[in-house]
Amino acid sequence: MFSSKNQYTPEKSIIRLTSHMEICQRDYPLDWYQSDFAPYAEAYLALPDRKLTTVIEWMRPYIEKAYDHFGEQLLLLSHYYMGGEIVRLVETFGGVIGDSYQLALMAVNHPEKTVIVESAVHFMAESIALLANDNQTVYITNPKAGCTMEMLAKDFMVEPALQELNARYGQDNVLPICYMNTSGRIKAMTGAQGGAVCTSSNVKQIVQWARKQKKKILFIPDKLMGENVAYWLGMNNIAYWPGGSDGARYTLSNQDAATLRSFDAAELVLFSSYCAVHAYYKSNMCEYWHKQGFTVIAHPECPNEVIRQADLAGSTSLIWDQVMFDRAKTGRYAIATENHLVQNLKEQGALRGIQVVNVAEAPSDAEGPGVGCGCATMSRNDPPHLVALLDLLRQGKSVDYNIIRAGDEVNEFTGLRDRLTQQEQRWIAEHAKKALNQMIEITEGRL
Ligand code: SF4
Image: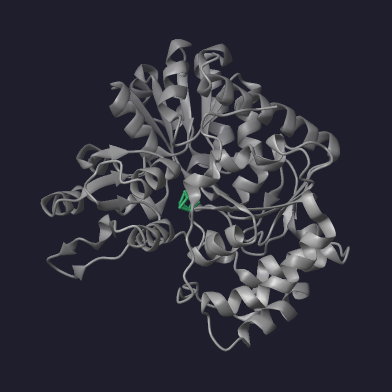
C-alpha cells in the first residue's frame, strides 16, 4: 500500500455549492460525442438552462442508479483544472478532486474501488491505471481529453533523445526524470533506466536526488519547469533537446561544435515541450498585482521570469490550500495557473471573503485587462460524458473506447488508441511502476 503526506483530505477540497452557480462550460456539437453517448448529449442539450441545480437534477437519477448498482466499488475522480461544474458535480456525488499526484494514488490506496471513472486528461487516468490492481478498471469519460504538453513529448519523440545521449555518454551516465504529465510509455522508459517520475509538488526533491547520482539528467518535459528547478537549485549548465516532432528528428551528430560542447557540459538536458496555458504569463503582470497588494502565487510550469517575481510557487494543491486558508493573511491572491482552477478559487474564495484574480487579468496598455487560459482539452469531459459512461457501465454495455490500459497510444483527435499486447502492457506497467515508486520513496524521504 502506498502512502503520501500529500494524500487527499476531504477538508482541503471543501467546494461549497450555491444554487445560482452557472455551468460555465460551453456546449459541444452532437458529432463530438461517441455514438453511444449521443442520446445523453441530446438530452443535455435540450435542458432549459445550464444552472447548476438544473444540471444536477438531470444527472442525479443516472448517478444514483450507478451507485445503487456498483455501491462501494465505484469511485469518481476529477482534477482541479476541470471546468468548475464537473468539479462541483463530482464532489456533489461523493467523488474526489485532486491534483495529478493525489489522483495517481487513488486506485492503489482504495483497493475496494474496482470501477474508477476519471474526468481529467489521459495521462492522469493512465497513471492511476499503472498503479492499479488487476481487479480495478480505470475509465476516462472522454479519451479525446489529452494534455498538450504530453502530446509534444510522445515516446517516438523522446526515444531518440535518450538513445543519442546514451550512445554519446554511456547508459550508466544518463538518468531520465519524467514529469507526471507523460504517457506510461515514457514513464516506463524512465523506470527501465533507473529514473523517477516527478510532479510539480516534489520536482525539487526529485532533481536533488537525481543530482546525487552524478549523472547527466534528461528531464522530460517540461522545459519551463526544468528551467525553474535549475534556478532553485543553482544548476547553470543546461542543454535543450527540441520538443514535439522536432525532437524525433534531432540528432547530436548533426550539431555544430558549440552545441555539442553545451551538451557535454550540461548537468541537465531539457526536453523542450511545455504547457501553453502556463507559458502565457509575464513578470510585468505579477508586478502589477504586487502594487495592488495581492499575494502572487505561480505554478512551476510558468516561465522563470514569473517564478522570480511570485511570492510563492507550487503545485495545484498548494495553491488551493494557500488561498482557501488565506495562509498569507492578505485576503487577496493573484494566481498564475490554469483558469478553471482560478475560477473555482474565485468562486470558493468569495464565499469565504477572499479575493482572487488571475495574474493574466493585469491590464496591458495595448489591449486592456487580459484573461487567463483554461485547459481546453481537459474540458472535453462534460456532464453528458460522465452521465453516459456511468449509465452504460451500469447496463453492462461495452465501453472499451473509454478503458485505459498501460501503454495505450491515443489519437486525441479521434479518441481511438493503439493498444499493446498484454505482455507489452505488463512490461510498461512494471517499469513505469518502478519510476513512480522511486518518486514515492524519494518524496516520503526513504531514498
Ligand atoms: S493545463 Fe497544460 S499541462 Fe496541465 S493538463 Fe492542460 S495542457 Fe497539460
